[in-house]
Length: 192
Image 1 (spheres, rainbow, N blue to C red):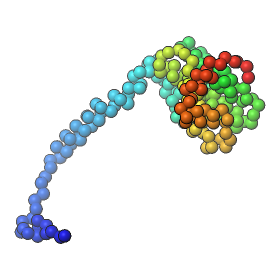
Image 2 (image 1 turned 180 degrees about the vertical axis):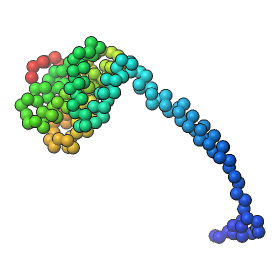
Image 3 (image 1 turned 180 degrees about the horizontal axis):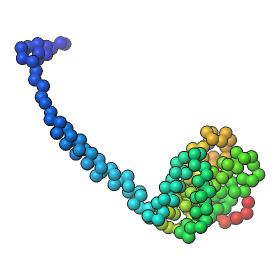
Image 4 (image 1 turned 30 degrees about the horizontal axis):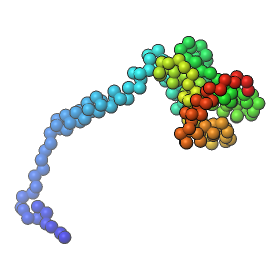
């Protein structure tokens, strides 16, 4: 149903009210202050919990893990750092890093993937220790990083599959990766 507007019944045009620019700016400033006071501390929360001496290395690890295909060379620097730091211990065994045993027997592409996955394991394991400040081998954190890196590069960078990484992805999707990591981390067998 149609209803006549105010203008059709009145000879006086409706008046526009003027909002001062100052009140608009003041309200935007209030919103900005609210956002800064509420959100920024939450964003910085993770950085505050990382000891200051570890922040640069954690940032390097995060850069590698966020874009492993673009930062593939960083894994060497991360691995070397893990070897020389006294506050980190990463135990590489064939159970948690089976790529150590096969990397020399394969094609260059498979070697590159093996190196990337070993680097992901070291990076994740090391990152957890640097963030928590607890020197303790963390196979679960290493394996989770392998799964994330493999997901990032599988089918995009490398056309083939890695059976161990595939198994770990399935375990991750089923929620059994932590138990698998505990089991594999307890097996001490340095032989390939």
